[in-house]
Image (cartoon, rainbow over all chains, first blue to last red; front, top):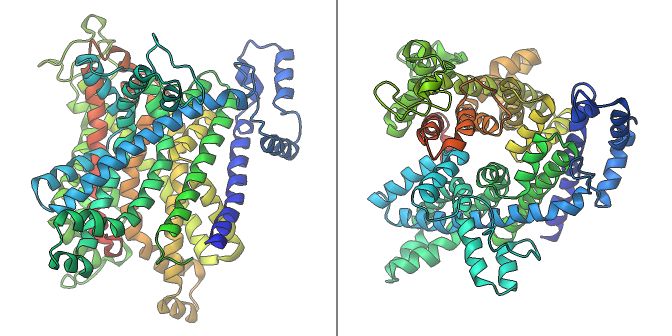
Length: 333
Length: 303
């Protein structure tokens, strides 16, 4: 197990280096003079020269790359051109917002998806099964930005049930400690604020969670169906065990192994979807951070934002691989 | 296969082994038979054909031009005259949705075709020649796959500049490693077959072996993956359009239409409902068709 983990971590290093290189090359691949593009047509020559120096564009690319890597190792993510402050100082609140949203989305997806899949398999070919499979089919084809807009229109605007945008009620803003608002509000003992934060999380959470939910439901169902055909399940039923325990205890344990992989993969993919969800729900996460940076051509922020999200994605995938090896003792690596 | 090719242009790659005696059932005919029996797959095929026809005949079907403005008629609700209502410039949404099919299908087919060509070429080279070449190409695939796909697309477009063409290029790039890996693994397994040894023994050139034996053997999974990739490509193009990184006005791209209309969702919800429905239906069609093709063409990929 330990050597497997170390081998997986070892494989990661070239990938991380390659990723960093691609992100590093982004700004250099811009046709023409990047500094000119960032500052616009009316920029003075001095300003362009200063920015070129600040971005290190006046040096050969390999020197720049070594410099860039060295900076990264010291936690230096560069300077935002817009706010003129170090990105590493201002990125955490955004990242925390994205992590909170993603965790809630995957939680919704797992709870609903796994149970829907189990019950579908249990009552195979019932109307419930057909309904779940139909919804799952539509779910995987859903453009999340459209789903988000529809939620806003029906739930927030028409029926006025939940807030449209933001993370908290602006009339009673949350005082950030960790920037994970669910934890912050509990730490401060403000249950009224906690409820507000939960209310704000529901719609974007569902929008972001729908695709993984659909995929998890389908995976759970087919995995359960396979396990429930096996001999030990027949034995369990033959000895008179209640169907509920056969399904939720005996079958689920083995059926969950492929599902865990899917859950892990989907958690990673959520990070991509989060960018779209955030722009719709005015969620101040890393997606919004990158999106705003694109609008204002703040290339260092685009670069570092992408690098941080991609690194997180790689680490989640690593964690899933190791978890997979750990929970299934039959797999030997 | 003849019928399949007629009804679904994306599959129009004539397989090499098609010239069989009529009495012999070729694998392609067999696949089409089991595809026909799959109801969901046929629904998917129906949806896809429907949107392809819309895309082709958009100018004939659309009652108005896609950029025809009539400010007096802004935000009209759906009626006999404007089936899907009008937008903030008084443009007919029904017509714009019809023309939008052209753009989305175009991006879907062309970007995936690009990824298939580049991906297969790289995959064949990596799988067939192995060693260092394989090592380099496979590492590049690993690195590209290490990014969440939409993020990589955003990165590419923010370098190239926002436009429909650049969005298409970005989507093609992010799909290259998917096909590359797929073809590479097929090549690795085909390479060990005895008929390849035989072909080598009679002095067949590498390039001929690759084109006549290895590539046809990779066709089935490429078609399956390609169909599913078109679905993703359409969503990604719409997502880039929605973020303002894809099609630019007045192009009636579905994602861009959503982005432009979202501010008016309270007064004119139809401006947002219909383009989104169009995206969802098209994607659903390709997904259903892809699932059906997988079951029909590649029994090994069945779960």
